[in-house]
Length: 111
Image 1: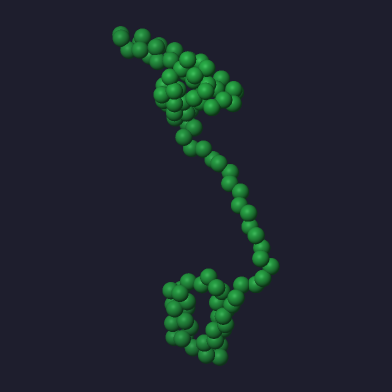
Image 2: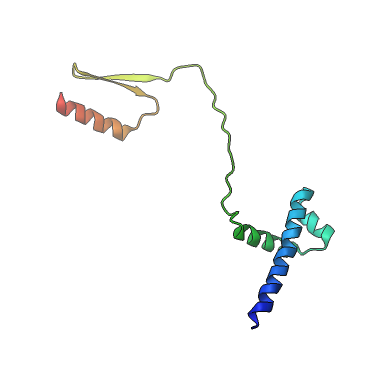
């Protein structure tokens, strides 16, 4: 029967810290400053924030990223490779050597 009071105490603590974490988010203060102003232990604040985030499923956060793509306006250099009279391969600057070797061997075997 001792588990009942512990659960109740844990629930009270959880509500207490949930309220402070909500208030902190609304305040737009740094965590350390919010804790100082409210007489809270920073260690306990961080602990409860992490614990409550985990219990609310907030571990996986999607953060949108943006990338800037800059066009140079020039074509990449290409190398034309003729294999027999039947095949021509245009090779870009960023080609993969191993793939090219396999392709050449395959084309030579069928020409």
